[in-house]
Length: 475
Image (cartoon, rainbow, N blue to C red; front, side, top):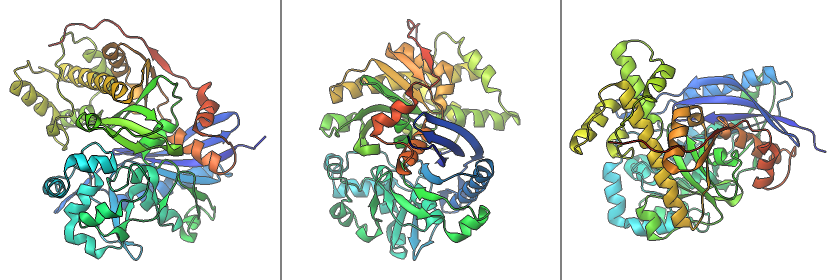
């Protein structure tokens, strides 16, 4: 029997990050978060950016703590949010990566669609149209691309700074709009057509690839401790789905800043009905397909809380707010995917404006606003999963909610109510778990396909069960 291995899962979310130490072996996986840190955008004169240098500092600090707590730590792998990237020349970053919520891509979307119709684009990349998809961002960068020789997605950039390796992991590459959805290779013809030099696209690597050891100066930061750097499902949702024990009739919602609701399939769904319904086909671990729709997610609540905290000058007590929201009887339902909710800002005011424009009664206080957000998210998840099942020809009998949203009992219950299906909530750290499982397999501590990896941890998961209740009156 193989011996367990200890690895560090670096999980970078759109609002926070964490470094998690995991023990992975034939008996399952155990996780311990050793470092948490904020991930806030930086507003510069030319737009909204990521502080990736600061993130790398936090990653190294977290690895230092991981090595201290677990002297036998053997490996590390990085996952993060999708679509954003850094441009490099001769290994050096030439500009600070833009944040996907920056508004610069509007003209680029028009330019791309003038060159290639949305239906033709979907047939090639299988992606839900989102104005911040990498392909639109690269076209928006225009002449800036001439100063670069390589594009690296965020987790690949961190991996490059750790190991020196240059490559693009497949699951995150699948979110760029430049990966051929049927062949799993870069669509260089599409890149050329859109004025993007194919040489910018780094060689593709699959999850479970060994990149090498730490660069000497990074190892020195860890007291001389070396680690094997590998790839996992570097799109955080790919790792989250890998860490979710899905039954044959299960759907998933990976819920954090975004709510990604969908199914795991063997092959993409590329018909025009899927395109018009806003579904995406993204790469998963072991060649699986994540057929899903991006829902705005708990960003709506967190941005509302930030607005209220600015108004009050003190923190908002979330538990009390959720308890009050649970007592609201006639919540507003609104379209959480309305584009007005994408940029940072006063979400409660935007919800009121939406209600006024649609002849609905606006929420009158914070509990009503909170309930409107959660009820509308639950309705979006339920509607999305019903449509996913129709498009894929699948039956869904249960929903698994993982990520931070699994901690929100009201959201989980409302999702059960609106879908009419049982909801299982957890694990919260599904992304770190999926990351660790693939690392453990790469390092030889466990073996088997994705289903075998999930079976290792299925019996040990502590999940909350929510059964559907009758719906009340909704305005």
